[in-house]
Length: 345
Image (cartoon, rainbow, N blue to C red):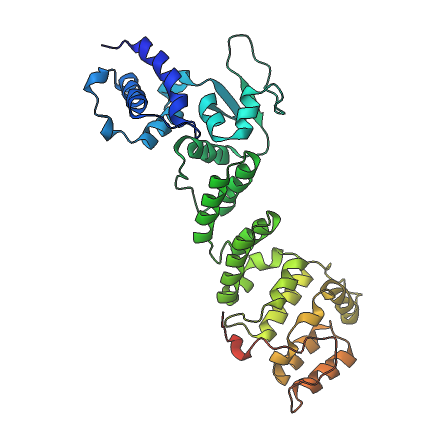
């Protein structure tokens, strides 16, 4: 019969070999770790344990999260105001960065000073506690446990964690989860973050959704928060399902108005139009005015104040020409986005 204290000692020695990615634990070692763990948890004889009923991932997850097993941890992390306990062998076996941090004297991360006989304590300033918890669970189980996909940006923070600690599998699995949970309500935020991280595949998925659900996305409040780079890429799109060029123009003008101070009573509409044109200058030539009817152009762009009189006349003549502006020599785009926003991809 094993004693409780002897189980603790044996488990502490065995667990690193089981979880280290570079080490393949043999059947006897794995059996021992599972048996010791269950003995400690339940206080029963190791010979009575049916290890097949205890999946290794469940075992590892409870080793991380069960408060009754915190005394087995040999390292702690302060993330925000939350303290996480972990096991050096597991972290070092999964990540070369953790290995350097925890076992190398040349590691760049410095632990907080702690009294003698206390376990090492490290501070993490660039991750949220929820993100760090998800990363730890991945390190212990090699699985990305179902995150809260209602906060998609928090899930995306795992990509940053993956790069920081050199965990390519975590990066790939996180991007897969995010790709399956892009919605019209979050696509602009996801695209912004994906662009920051230069995740081209994720960016392509976002643009596909924007093209397919253009009306919902361009009508949303989030649309007004984006920058000029997004607007330029948006106007490069050949297909925006259900989106008329007139409505698209009006929404981009609304976006520009958010960036121009409201005119006072002494300001003329012409002065305000000049300020709007200044904001829209990088994208003004990318609108597909030839996709509009003469009526749409006259009641929209002509009334907006962002086009000069000469430009208004030039565009209107091209819209009403027999060749629909195909031979139009101009700075403005001579392409169309398709009448009624016909979509093909």
